[in-house]
Image 1 (cartoon, rainbow, N blue to C red):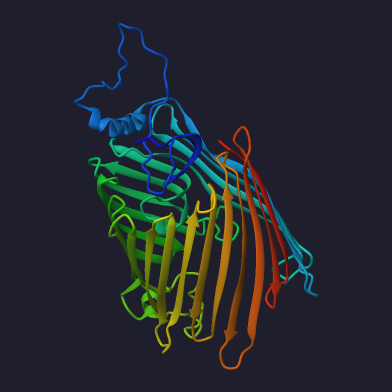
Image 2 (image 1 turned 90 degrees about the horizontal axis):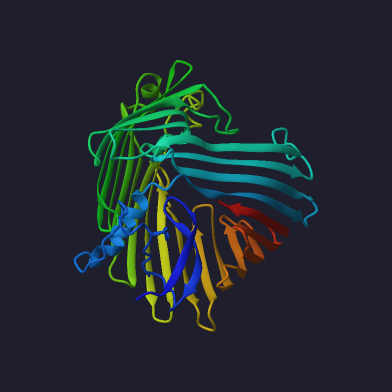
Length: 482
């Protein structure tokens, strides 16, 4: 049955922000959203639009899926999404050190799609920030400084149904994400909609300032496979090799394997691994020809509509690079860190949700694991529509210290899109071997206001008191969504 009419306001890669136009029944978590076409002028009686969908009993069962395909495949001119905003953050330090801090920020996240009536898109993500401190913290941290970042400035053509795709500019590779940001180009040939092969080349931006830097050259080759439909069953697989060089010397060479398999929302299995190939000076320092520097496996299964379980395994080891080459062996941390984590969530009647998680991580050479755990419970709509309450708790225990934190949140949302919340909690820990105890309490008020003409306003005030932090935080943002 139909429960509401929604209007899409902002689209991201894996989610969307929607405005509630009309509510017919209660909207619940798990309800299916079916996209429909925008109304168009009626065609003349003698004409039939090329992309019209005949309404007959034979195709009634497939109407939702057909509408989805038609909406995404039709050419309707360039579409834009994203946001632009101005932020202001400040911290009023109440300790004798008086380390007040102010930080105005400008952010832009913009994407244009379907440019020139093709699957060509333009993306820019940038941030400009000015840090103002009451006093200089050190020779490398002045009292005031600009801190600008250009995360992405790219133009790309991404359509697996055509023989050739490309991506250029400052980009983040959608197939070899582990290489990070790159100033360069990526070319991909599609042997079929399911199978593609590509290369990438460029330079690595300065990691501290985000400025263009030609010191490190990055190259990569990959093969990617994608089959199925994410709403039913889909498999994604990428096998890649990446190489980077600095001033004529090897920086890093490694193999990368990525797999992701999901069956709707019922089951998912994710895997990524990196095998470093050690040649030349890297082999001398690593002491072996190959090193498994990264292995991550994560799985999730929904036993039914109420119970879901998850398990992940993480195995990481630092690798030698050109920037760490000059470090003494005694200073380079080449220890392996292995960990495992479990999580579970349960939906109960009355719109109650309970979740819990816990795991450990162990560093080779150490006899003690580092444990962490957490959990919470939330309920929405018990007292009146739009009202929610949640309780959260977490803790940790390692060879240096142990501690815990707890909090609660009261939230009220409105059909107009506005909502605000009040949260309070504390953070406590103590050092081992006779160390001291530390306790910090906090209170936070947050509000979000959906203004007219796609504008929004959000802000937060936080009060902290305790041994580690004593002061007030202020944060406000005014923005516009495209």
